[in-house]
Image 1 (spheres, rainbow, N blue to C red):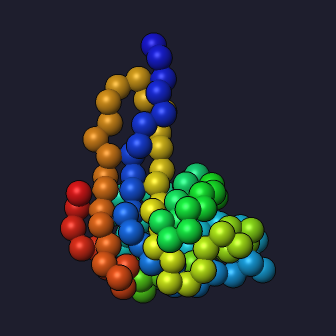
Image 2 (cartoon, rainbow, N blue to C red):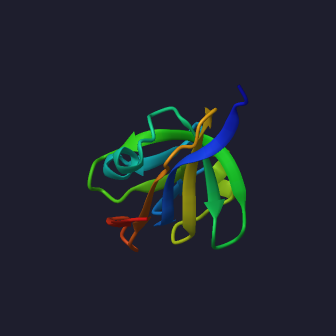
Amino acid sequence: MQLREILKSKIHRATVTEADVNYVGSVTVDQTLLEAVDIWPGELVHVWNVTNGERFETYALVGEPGSGLVRINGAGAHKAKPGDVVIIAAFALSDEPITPKLILVDADNRLERYL
């Protein structure tokens, strides 16, 4: 058996709504979006900043459902600011192919469509 790290979840082109360097780590995301792509609270996520090219890893925290919140917390707040467009992705180890859950969001971080 060979385990591979495979994309399982992606929120594509979310807009950063807040950045708080004084918060202790993580990225807080609208619960509706996390549920749409099956990302759990505390799960490792990659944040790729489309606006400035920065990339970092952190963990997901749940924001109020329907709020459109995407708040970059802690050290990651040095790599993104409100208005930046980001991709939030999570991976899984598997010995079989995985069909990832991928969504595109609009400028207000509302689910636009599944990809």
